[in-house]
Image (cartoon, rainbow, N blue to C red; front, side, top):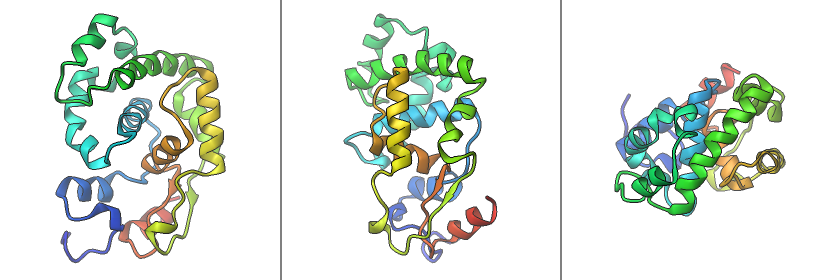
Length: 194
């Protein structure tokens, strides 16, 4: 696929990592718990930063956080967190690192309560992707009533770095909502597959 001539969402730009993420991952429905934990972690890490910064550090996150295995991350100690604060391959924010460990523990509790994180999560969109029809990127909201409800419930369970805007970015990433603009080649592919 030609990176320059294929019509895609404006935010993807021409950075090859961003384009590949846009074309192959963003908005594709995810039901694998480990991948859901990965995106929950990465979206929280992104707060205040660009998504490109996080994509550039994604492999570093995989290595630092046990390939996003929540059971392993839940076992991290204060010493592990301090070691991670010295790791230039990730965002070295103390609160974001601590929240990832906290969220792994909470993630396991939610899995136990609901059978899977997937079962818990997709209830917020009645089990299927919300199909939007945005003409232009700037019309896409930063949060919705669904992301507000998800944020409130995640916080009630004890998750951190899960405000409504982070939750909406997470929902977009894992395909709970199709926010590709209507002129993007991914829009129809994901609309047809719902």
